[in-house]
Length: 253
Image 1 (cartoon, rainbow, N blue to C red):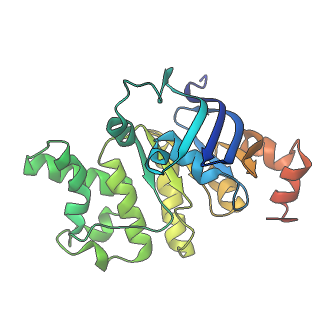
Image 2 (cartoon, helix red, strand yellow):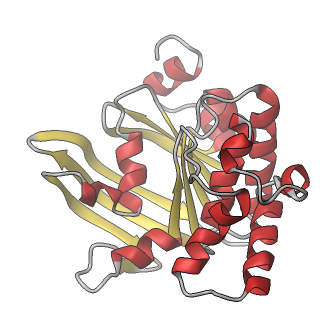
């Protein structure tokens, strides 16, 4: 099956005040793939993820040059609804932040804001989202319990479920497993591999090993520049750039 480009990034430059953090980056993201973007700290990876749903707009004195095309249309077009863009491109951060309400209401919050009032419809959305995030079996008997009562790994899966409840097309994950134990990490990774059947996923993995486990393609960034990208096996087994090889083998980073 031929790959369909979901997002085409062309000559992207990102600035905060006078500091440039991404330099002339061009990258295609295929539909229904897991793309891992990895590299050391201060490589611009979080900025890249936040550019894809325009969260950087919220940072004073930020600006971008270049183009990001989503299904052929620019996300920077004046007619684009940023609210709708952020629904379509849900983001999960490294530290899970649950709302100070019940597990059920955490998931139902977004759909309610979107106008869904039916208890039956909300219940279906909550169950489906929790199932996709591999959390349903853990919480189905305590949906009214505070979300804060969940473990760290469960709260992270709750955050993924909350994004899924909005029926996104793209899921952005910024080191979602960085503070989690191996069992919780494995559950999230298993979920992501299943979710790519329905969604396009871009993740900043917390280790190169995680990128190797879950990715279809990988991209290596260093100091704001895209050094190398390609299919996982090609980049990991035969990197074209010495810097990629050095990072993958642990010589720096």
